[in-house]
Amino acid sequence: MSSVPAQAQEDEAKVPPYTLPDVLRDEQGGRIESVDAWRAGRRAAVLDLLARHEYGRTPGGRFPGQRWEVTAYDATALGGRATRKEVTLWLTGAATGPRLRLLLYVPNGVSGPRPVFLGLNFFGNHTVHADPGISLADPLVTFDVDRYRPAPATPSPADHQRGVHAGKWQIESVLARGFASATVWCFDACPDRVDGLKESVPAAFATGGAEDRADEAWGAIGVWAWALSRAMDALAEDADLDARRVVVHGFSRLGKAALWAGAQDERFAAVVSFQSGCGGAALHKRVYGETVRLINDRFPHWFSRSFR
Image (cartoon, rainbow, N blue to C red; front, top):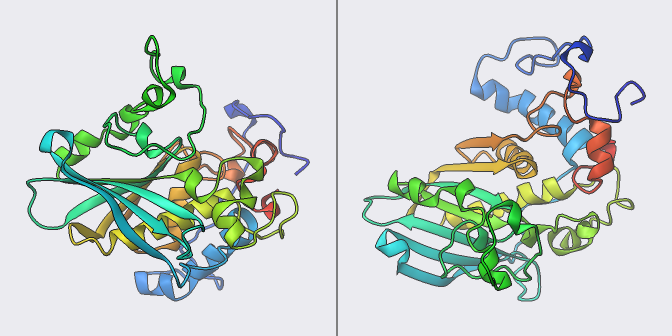
Protein backbone atom coordinates (compact mmCIF):
# COMPACT_ATOMS: atom_id res chain seq x y z
CA MET A 1 0.00 0.00 0.00
CA SER A 2 3.01 2.28 -0.13
CA SER A 3 1.73 3.96 -3.32
CA VAL A 4 -1.64 4.79 -1.75
CA PRO A 5 -1.85 8.23 -0.09
CA ALA A 6 -2.59 8.29 3.62
CA GLN A 7 -4.98 11.23 3.24
CA ALA A 8 -8.06 11.69 1.07
CA GLN A 9 -7.10 12.44 -2.52
CA GLU A 10 -9.32 15.08 -4.19
CA ASP A 11 -7.17 16.23 -7.10
CA GLU A 12 -8.34 14.75 -10.43
CA ALA A 13 -4.89 15.37 -11.91
CA LYS A 14 -3.40 12.88 -9.42
CA VAL A 15 -5.66 9.97 -10.35
CA PRO A 16 -3.25 7.26 -11.57
CA PRO A 17 -3.87 5.12 -14.66
CA TYR A 18 -6.13 2.18 -13.95
CA THR A 19 -7.93 -0.61 -15.78
CA LEU A 20 -11.17 -2.02 -14.45
CA PRO A 21 -11.78 -5.76 -14.77
CA ASP A 22 -14.81 -6.92 -16.76
CA VAL A 23 -16.92 -8.83 -14.25
CA LEU A 24 -19.07 -10.19 -17.09
CA ARG A 25 -16.25 -12.38 -18.34
CA ASP A 26 -15.51 -15.77 -16.84
CA GLU A 27 -12.06 -16.84 -15.69
CA GLN A 28 -11.31 -18.19 -19.17
CA GLY A 29 -12.19 -14.83 -20.74
CA GLY A 30 -15.53 -15.92 -22.18
CA ARG A 31 -18.41 -13.46 -22.19
CA ILE A 32 -21.25 -14.12 -19.73
CA GLU A 33 -24.45 -13.72 -21.74
CA SER A 34 -27.25 -14.71 -19.36
CA VAL A 35 -28.42 -14.51 -15.75
CA ASP A 36 -28.19 -18.29 -15.50
CA ALA A 37 -24.57 -18.24 -16.64
CA TRP A 38 -23.76 -15.51 -14.12
CA ARG A 39 -25.33 -17.46 -11.27
CA ALA A 40 -23.70 -20.71 -12.34
CA GLY A 41 -20.15 -19.49 -11.90
CA ARG A 42 -18.93 -15.92 -11.98
CA ARG A 43 -21.26 -14.61 -9.26
CA ALA A 44 -19.83 -17.01 -6.68
CA ALA A 45 -16.27 -16.12 -7.69
CA VAL A 46 -16.88 -12.37 -7.33
CA LEU A 47 -18.61 -12.85 -3.97
CA ASP A 48 -15.64 -14.89 -2.79
CA LEU A 49 -13.21 -12.12 -3.81
CA LEU A 50 -15.22 -9.51 -1.89
CA ALA A 51 -15.51 -11.76 1.17
CA ARG A 52 -11.83 -12.73 1.13
CA HIS A 53 -10.37 -9.28 0.54
CA GLU A 54 -12.86 -6.71 1.84
CA TYR A 55 -15.97 -7.47 3.89
CA GLY A 56 -14.90 -10.75 5.46
CA ARG A 57 -16.70 -14.06 5.33
CA THR A 58 -20.26 -14.30 6.60
CA PRO A 59 -20.01 -17.18 9.11
CA GLY A 60 -23.53 -18.50 8.65
CA GLY A 61 -27.18 -17.77 7.94
CA ARG A 62 -29.99 -17.54 10.43
CA PHE A 63 -29.63 -19.44 13.68
CA PRO A 64 -31.89 -22.52 13.88
CA GLY A 65 -33.73 -21.08 16.88
CA GLN A 66 -34.46 -17.66 15.37
CA ARG A 67 -37.96 -16.45 16.18
CA TRP A 68 -39.90 -13.23 16.04
CA GLU A 69 -43.20 -11.73 17.08
CA VAL A 70 -45.09 -8.46 16.79
CA THR A 71 -44.48 -6.78 20.13
CA ALA A 72 -46.35 -3.51 19.45
CA TYR A 73 -49.16 -2.72 17.00
CA ASP A 74 -51.21 0.36 16.09
CA ALA A 75 -53.58 0.27 13.11
CA THR A 76 -54.26 4.01 13.35
CA ALA A 77 -50.71 5.41 13.36
CA LEU A 78 -49.84 8.74 11.75
CA GLY A 79 -53.42 9.97 11.89
CA GLY A 80 -54.78 6.73 10.47
CA ARG A 81 -52.57 6.74 7.37
CA ALA A 82 -50.55 3.71 8.45
CA THR A 83 -50.35 0.63 10.59
CA ARG A 84 -47.26 0.72 12.80
CA LYS A 85 -45.74 -2.59 13.83
CA GLU A 86 -42.76 -3.25 16.04
CA VAL A 87 -41.34 -6.73 15.54
CA THR A 88 -38.74 -8.22 17.88
CA LEU A 89 -36.44 -10.84 16.37
CA TRP A 90 -34.63 -13.05 18.88
CA LEU A 91 -31.79 -14.13 16.62
CA THR A 92 -30.66 -17.23 18.51
CA GLY A 93 -34.07 -17.89 20.04
CA ALA A 94 -32.79 -17.05 23.51
CA ALA A 95 -34.45 -14.15 25.32
CA THR A 96 -31.03 -13.04 26.59
CA GLY A 97 -29.33 -13.37 23.18
CA PRO A 98 -28.92 -10.77 20.45
CA ARG A 99 -32.11 -9.27 19.09
CA LEU A 100 -33.24 -6.91 16.38
CA ARG A 101 -36.12 -4.50 16.81
CA LEU A 102 -37.80 -3.92 13.46
CA LEU A 103 -40.00 -0.85 13.01
CA LEU A 104 -42.52 -1.19 10.18
CA TYR A 105 -45.05 1.25 8.75
CA VAL A 106 -47.60 -0.23 6.32
CA PRO A 107 -49.84 2.18 4.38
CA ASN A 108 -53.55 1.82 5.10
CA GLY A 109 -56.13 1.94 2.33
CA VAL A 110 -53.92 0.12 -0.17
CA SER A 111 -55.13 -3.20 -1.53
CA GLY A 112 -52.87 -6.24 -1.79
CA PRO A 113 -49.40 -6.89 -0.37
CA ARG A 114 -47.29 -3.72 -0.25
CA PRO A 115 -43.73 -3.40 -1.55
CA VAL A 116 -41.18 -2.36 1.08
CA PHE A 117 -38.18 -0.09 1.54
CA LEU A 118 -35.90 -1.60 4.22
CA GLY A 119 -32.88 0.14 5.68
CA LEU A 120 -30.72 0.36 8.77
CA ASN A 121 -30.69 3.55 10.81
CA PHE A 122 -27.84 5.16 12.74
CA PHE A 123 -29.19 6.16 16.15
CA GLY A 124 -32.37 4.23 16.93
CA ASN A 125 -35.79 3.66 15.40
CA HIS A 126 -37.23 6.63 17.27
CA THR A 127 -35.02 8.98 15.24
CA VAL A 128 -36.61 8.17 11.84
CA HIS A 129 -39.95 9.81 12.70
CA ALA A 130 -41.34 12.00 15.49
CA ASP A 131 -44.19 9.54 16.10
CA PRO A 132 -44.36 9.28 19.93
CA GLY A 133 -45.54 5.69 19.64
CA ILE A 134 -42.12 4.43 18.47
CA SER A 135 -40.28 2.64 21.25
CA LEU A 136 -37.05 4.31 22.29
CA ALA A 137 -33.77 2.64 21.50
CA ASP A 138 -32.36 0.63 24.37
CA PRO A 139 -29.89 1.80 25.42
CA LEU A 140 -30.11 5.37 24.14
CA VAL A 141 -26.93 6.53 22.44
CA THR A 142 -25.72 10.08 22.94
CA PHE A 143 -25.02 11.95 19.72
CA ASP A 144 -24.75 15.53 18.53
CA VAL A 145 -28.44 16.10 17.91
CA ASP A 146 -27.93 19.82 17.25
CA ARG A 147 -26.31 18.94 13.93
CA TYR A 148 -29.74 17.79 12.78
CA ARG A 149 -32.18 20.37 14.15
CA PRO A 150 -32.31 23.26 16.66
CA ALA A 151 -32.63 22.01 20.22
CA PRO A 152 -35.87 22.69 22.17
CA ALA A 153 -35.50 25.00 25.15
CA THR A 154 -35.63 22.29 27.83
CA PRO A 155 -35.57 18.91 26.07
CA SER A 156 -35.54 15.52 27.71
CA PRO A 157 -33.01 13.17 26.06
CA ALA A 158 -35.78 11.14 24.40
CA ASP A 159 -37.76 14.13 23.11
CA HIS A 160 -34.54 15.69 21.90
CA GLN A 161 -33.84 12.68 19.67
CA ARG A 162 -37.27 11.80 18.33
CA GLY A 163 -37.51 12.37 14.60
CA VAL A 164 -34.10 14.02 14.17
CA HIS A 165 -33.48 11.94 11.02
CA ALA A 166 -37.06 12.14 9.72
CA GLY A 167 -35.92 14.26 6.80
CA LYS A 168 -33.68 11.45 5.62
CA TRP A 169 -36.49 8.88 5.74
CA GLN A 170 -39.55 10.73 4.37
CA ILE A 171 -41.83 8.01 5.69
CA GLU A 172 -45.08 9.82 4.88
CA SER A 173 -44.00 10.30 1.26
CA VAL A 174 -43.11 6.61 1.00
CA LEU A 175 -46.49 5.60 2.45
CA ALA A 176 -48.40 8.00 0.17
CA ARG A 177 -46.97 6.11 -2.82
CA GLY A 178 -48.18 2.77 -1.52
CA PHE A 179 -44.88 1.48 -0.12
CA ALA A 180 -44.19 0.20 3.38
CA SER A 181 -41.14 1.46 5.26
CA ALA A 182 -39.06 -0.75 7.55
CA THR A 183 -35.97 -0.07 9.61
CA VAL A 184 -33.65 -1.61 12.21
CA TRP A 185 -31.09 0.18 14.36
CA CYS A 186 -27.64 -0.97 13.27
CA PHE A 187 -26.40 -1.03 16.89
CA ASP A 188 -28.82 -3.87 17.66
CA ALA A 189 -26.70 -6.10 15.41
CA CYS A 190 -23.27 -4.60 16.09
CA PRO A 191 -22.42 -1.37 17.92
CA ASP A 192 -20.48 1.00 15.67
CA ARG A 193 -17.42 1.06 17.92
CA VAL A 194 -13.97 -0.48 17.65
CA ASP A 195 -14.92 -2.88 20.46
CA GLY A 196 -18.37 -3.57 19.00
CA LEU A 197 -17.30 -6.88 17.43
CA LYS A 198 -17.24 -8.39 20.92
CA GLU A 199 -20.96 -7.74 21.42
CA SER A 200 -24.35 -8.82 20.04
CA VAL A 201 -24.30 -10.77 16.74
CA PRO A 202 -20.51 -11.01 16.26
CA ALA A 203 -20.18 -12.28 19.83
CA ALA A 204 -22.78 -14.97 19.10
CA PHE A 205 -20.57 -16.11 16.21
CA ALA A 206 -17.39 -15.83 18.35
CA THR A 207 -15.88 -13.35 15.88
CA GLY A 208 -13.22 -11.90 18.17
CA GLY A 209 -12.12 -8.30 18.51
CA ALA A 210 -11.17 -5.88 15.75
CA GLU A 211 -7.48 -6.75 16.15
CA ASP A 212 -7.56 -10.37 17.33
CA ARG A 213 -9.99 -11.95 14.83
CA ALA A 214 -9.00 -14.05 11.84
CA ASP A 215 -7.85 -12.07 8.79
CA GLU A 216 -10.93 -13.02 6.78
CA ALA A 217 -13.43 -12.72 9.65
CA TRP A 218 -16.26 -10.32 9.02
CA GLY A 219 -16.42 -6.78 10.38
CA ALA A 220 -19.33 -4.52 11.31
CA ILE A 221 -20.41 -3.97 7.70
CA GLY A 222 -20.70 -7.72 7.20
CA VAL A 223 -22.71 -8.03 10.41
CA TRP A 224 -25.06 -5.21 9.39
CA ALA A 225 -25.61 -6.84 5.99
CA TRP A 226 -26.43 -10.12 7.75
CA ALA A 227 -28.92 -8.28 9.97
CA LEU A 228 -30.72 -6.90 6.90
CA SER A 229 -31.22 -10.48 5.71
CA ARG A 230 -32.62 -11.46 9.11
CA ALA A 231 -35.07 -8.54 8.91
CA MET A 232 -35.99 -9.85 5.47
CA ASP A 233 -36.80 -13.21 7.06
CA ALA A 234 -39.54 -11.54 9.08
CA LEU A 235 -40.82 -9.32 6.26
CA ALA A 236 -41.17 -12.38 4.02
CA GLU A 237 -43.73 -13.88 6.42
CA ASP A 238 -45.89 -10.76 6.82
CA ALA A 239 -49.05 -11.15 4.72
CA ASP A 240 -49.36 -7.34 4.41
CA LEU A 241 -46.09 -7.17 2.46
CA ASP A 242 -44.85 -8.25 -0.97
CA ALA A 243 -41.63 -10.16 -0.27
CA ARG A 244 -40.81 -10.17 -4.00
CA ARG A 245 -40.50 -6.37 -3.96
CA VAL A 246 -38.28 -5.43 -1.03
CA VAL A 247 -35.72 -2.70 -1.74
CA VAL A 248 -32.77 -2.53 0.65
CA HIS A 249 -31.24 0.93 1.07
CA GLY A 250 -28.65 2.78 3.11
CA PHE A 251 -26.53 5.90 3.45
CA SER A 252 -22.73 6.11 3.91
CA ARG A 253 -21.46 3.15 6.00
CA LEU A 254 -24.97 1.72 5.99
CA GLY A 255 -24.98 2.13 2.21
CA LYS A 256 -21.97 -0.19 2.15
CA ALA A 257 -23.95 -2.67 4.23
CA ALA A 258 -26.95 -2.41 1.88
CA LEU A 259 -24.72 -3.20 -1.12
CA TRP A 260 -23.20 -6.23 0.58
CA ALA A 261 -26.63 -7.44 1.73
CA GLY A 262 -28.07 -7.13 -1.77
CA ALA A 263 -25.07 -8.87 -3.31
CA GLN A 264 -25.34 -11.88 -1.01
CA ASP A 265 -29.12 -12.19 -0.62
CA GLU A 266 -31.01 -12.42 -3.90
CA ARG A 267 -34.36 -12.04 -2.14
CA PHE A 268 -33.80 -8.28 -2.31
CA ALA A 269 -35.32 -6.92 -5.51
CA ALA A 270 -33.10 -3.83 -5.65
CA VAL A 271 -30.46 -1.87 -3.76
CA VAL A 272 -30.38 1.91 -3.26
CA SER A 273 -27.02 2.94 -1.82
CA PHE A 274 -26.33 6.64 -1.30
CA GLN A 275 -22.80 8.03 -0.84
CA SER A 276 -21.36 4.64 0.13
CA GLY A 277 -17.86 5.81 -0.84
CA CYS A 278 -14.67 3.86 -0.18
CA GLY A 279 -15.45 0.26 0.61
CA GLY A 280 -18.82 0.73 -1.07
CA ALA A 281 -19.61 1.77 -4.64
CA ALA A 282 -16.51 3.95 -5.13
CA LEU A 283 -13.69 2.58 -7.31
CA HIS A 284 -10.62 1.60 -5.29
CA LYS A 285 -8.39 1.51 -8.36
CA ARG A 286 -9.21 5.11 -9.18
CA VAL A 287 -7.61 6.30 -5.90
CA TYR A 288 -9.88 9.31 -5.52
CA GLY A 289 -11.48 10.47 -2.28
CA GLU A 290 -11.06 8.42 0.88
CA THR A 291 -8.38 5.75 0.55
CA VAL A 292 -8.31 2.13 1.68
CA ARG A 293 -5.56 2.94 4.15
CA LEU A 294 -7.42 5.90 5.60
CA ILE A 295 -10.75 4.12 6.06
CA ASN A 296 -9.08 1.17 7.78
CA ASP A 297 -7.12 3.48 10.07
CA ARG A 298 -10.28 5.36 11.07
CA PHE A 299 -12.65 2.41 11.26
CA PRO A 300 -10.65 -0.77 11.94
CA HIS A 301 -13.81 -2.69 12.86
CA TRP A 302 -15.78 -2.14 9.63
CA PHE A 303 -14.03 -4.51 7.22
CA SER A 304 -11.97 -7.70 7.38
CA ARG A 305 -8.37 -7.40 8.53
CA SER A 306 -7.38 -8.69 5.09
CA PHE A 307 -8.73 -5.44 3.55
CA ARG A 308 -5.81 -3.62 5.16
